[in-house]
Image (cartoon, rainbow, N blue to C red; front, side, top):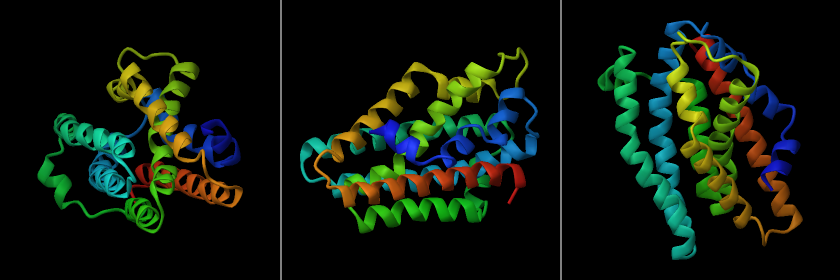
Length: 215
């Protein structure tokens, strides 16, 4: 299912995975202020991303469906402190992140996730959520495949997080859950799922670009 969604989301998916922001991370050439801007917006994104999984718990039709978004929400709640600590190492305090205005790209993306989830069911919500997890996993693999590991790359720890076995496994589980949710859908519903997946992919491109443009 995920392979088909990605294929039908082209050329946007490739632009997302191989974005200039990703290339500069791999080469260690991304300006520090661009990465700091990205980190602050990512903190704001993660808040709404967590809300989306909370909405997933609400949208679940049974305890089995509830398990996956609940587990992810618990992990996000625990790991946000790791994100805060990481941002501190880049000279960004949590208060600064809280006080940072959301970029238009962040507003558009996060509200789209929540709007899709509110209007649809769990399948629609996960169609919007999945490009983030799977895309970051694939972007990390793209870096590992096409760029040599640099000894002094300031962004290597970021790359290592998303190329780790734990994150790759979590991304695969997210994709598998979306597949299971789509098993009983008819063709019209699957077309709708594709449209959501493709739109979220375009939102991811804009989020990378926001980091480069400082918009």
